[in-house]
Length: 313
Image: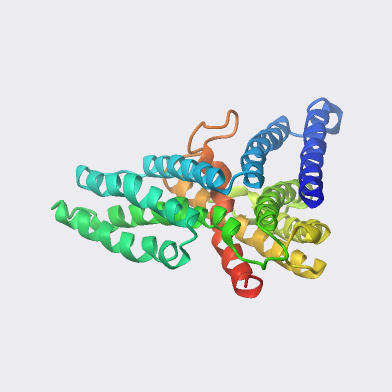
């Protein structure tokens, strides 16, 4: 219980400090900071307050946490589908995606049925989608239409479901189930602050843009500085994880930071391809839910499987 409150206190303290810094920068025109940059920074903080409160529910009810992630997944899937064109022949396949495969994935996670939720979408759903679209009789741009639905289901549902799945890993009776809640809170915290730190490093030291046509704000200096800083932050929170050693926690945090950046870049490429800047308006001032969980979607399955392989019993 003490560790739970300590972790929550540390995260809320960091978010509070970041909030104060954002409001202070807004009033300091003398430093010549671009107001747009400050507004973006503050919008990120506002969004992260919301998602940290969502994850905090894990300390009280794993089932409710899975449900909340399922709702986020459903909303993100909807935003993803609206980014890309779909024909009449795709609608029945999308019905199954939204109202069968999506809820079933999170039901299986809540029941801790790893053998099924780890293969249902990449095997059975992927085969079903192809067959269902083919049965519609529309062959025009068939591969593109199928790939769009499969990509949406993989990123927004399958990958995201591995975040609440952390609540059901077995680390031994000596740690207890509250250790899983701390692990999920740790994971989300590292993802969120890796984005923040990469953003800050990119603005302070960024010179070499990774892919200007995709996202002109992401630089190699931001990625490197943010990832290293995230690793240092993670090392100070090792006591909230089942990793036991600070250097293991630092390495896992570094892994999360790299995958989070990959997720954000991938989603930026998708939105750039569709001529979109933001995917929705769920969180005022900072786009939709898809804009805030893109990093989580890429980091969650990798973090889950590495943790499960090396540390779970």
